[in-house]
Amino acid sequence: MTMSSYEVLVIGGGPAGLSAALYLARYNRRTALFDTRQGRAHWHQVNHNYLGFPGGVPARQLCELGRQQLADYPHVTIFDSQVDDLRAESDTFVATGAGNEWRGQAVILCTGVVDHYPQFEGWQEYVGRSMFWCITCDGYETQGKRVVVVGNTNAAASEALQLQRFTDQLTVLTNSHEMQISLAFQERLRRARIPLIHDCLATVRGRGGQFEALYTEDGRCIELDWLFNQQGATPRSELAARLGVALDAQGYILTDTEQKTTVPGVYAAGDVTRLYSHQVVAAAHEGGQAASAANYYLYPPELKDD
Picture 1 (tube, rainbow, N blue to C red):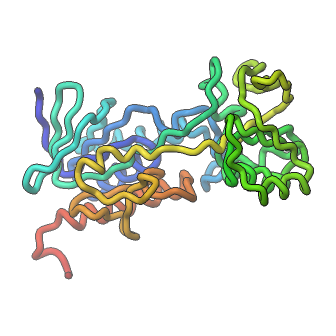
Picture 2 (cartoon, one colour; picture 1 turned 135 degrees about the vertical axis):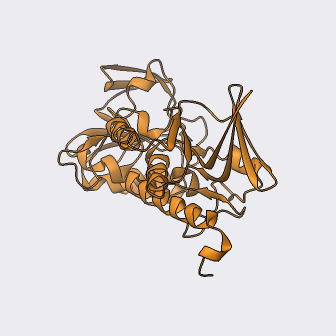
C-alpha cells in the first residue's frame, strides 16, 4: 500500500468537489481530489441555469473546465480513484482505495446521490437527453412537449401539476404495483385532466437517447418526448456514517451554514447535504464555502480571531 499526505481530502469530483478544490488551491493548500466521474454531472444534460454560459453548458464540459482550472495548481492532485473507506486516526483522516492510502487533516465530502431511474434496456443513453429529474433545471424545455412523469408519490403528482406551466400534454405513470399517491392528489390530477396510469414500465421505443414511446406491462403504449423521473434518490453518505457524522432521516449529511458537519474537520457540500434544491450553482457555492471553512480550521490558534 502506498501512502500520501495532504492538508485536505476532497471526495467527489462534481461541481461541489471541483469548486472546493479550486478554493483550496487558491488558499495554497495541498489538496487531493478523488473523482470517479460517476455522479449526476457526468450524464448528458446541458445546464441552462449556470450564469455566464449563453445557450447553456453541458454538465460534463463544466466539470472538464473545472479540471483545466485546477491544472494550474501543482499542489492539487486529482485521483481518478474511488475511496472505499474513510477513518479517523487521532487528528488525521485516512482514506483508502485500490491499494492506496491518503491522509489529510480535513475532509470535504462531495459524494452526491444515486438517482433511481426507471430500468429498461439502454436507459443510460436517455439520462440528460430526454430523461430528467429536475423541473428547475429542465422544465423550461418541455414547452409543447409530450411529457410523462414517472413516480408513485405525491411528489410525482405535484411535479406533473407544476409542469402545466410549460405543457398541457402530461401523463403520470406510477411504475409500481402499489398506489401510493394520495386520494387528494389523484383528485387534483383528475381535475387538471392529467391521466394517472397505475402500471409498470416494460420497454421503450426510441433512438439516440430520445424517447418515442413507452410500453407498460399491461400493454399500454404512451407516446412521449420527455420523461421526468420522480422515483427518488439515495445519498452517498456511507463514508460520512463511518466517521460518525450525523445524518438526517433520509441519510443526507447534516451541515451548518459553513458546511461543517458534526465531526470537527469534516465538511460536506453538494447534493449529499440536502434533500431539496439540488442545483449546480448551489453545489459550487457549498463547495467554496466548505473549502473556506476547512482552510480556517487548519490555521493554528494564534492566527484565528476567535
